[in-house]
Image 1 (cartoon, rainbow, N blue to C red):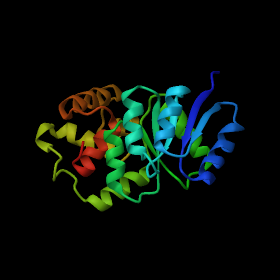
Image 2: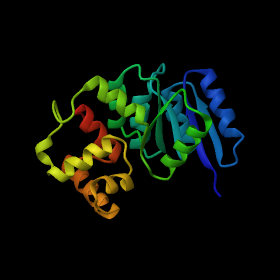
Image 3: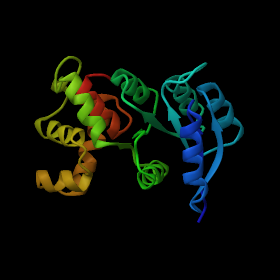
Image 4: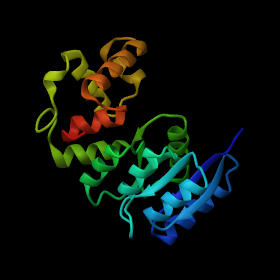
Length: 210
């Protein structure tokens, strides 16, 4: 099996070293390099192509949001954001720049590895606590930017289920429809909302921002 190449970008030596050790001893992963800021992360991504970039948000010289935008635009890898929830707006902006997932820094090693695998496999991941935090602070749900009129009643049910963190299988069970039908609804929702992926659907619903 081909190893998943990972770049670790964080201004904390402790975080970088810890993740380097966790991933370095696992045969499924290969650490392509470490960066202390967004500028270094972009340079490293350009030099050493990686599958997944673990990206802190708040870093000196260039923050993780700007670095994510450059990496996504140049197709240098998939970005998994590291966050402590200092600012929910930063999380939303990172999604707008193409981040594929979010990882709380007090994660377990197994959680870290699973999220990296999911991102690498093309599955956008947003931890349940992220949804809860944003929803709790924003209290928008269908207003202040979210254009509810664009969607049918059934599409809104699917959107709300996505925002609750449900998988396609769980949505299908909840709404008594097939997984294939759920996928079709999601495709339509993405097109109507001019959105790129299901994580963005959830954030758009919860915050009203694309």
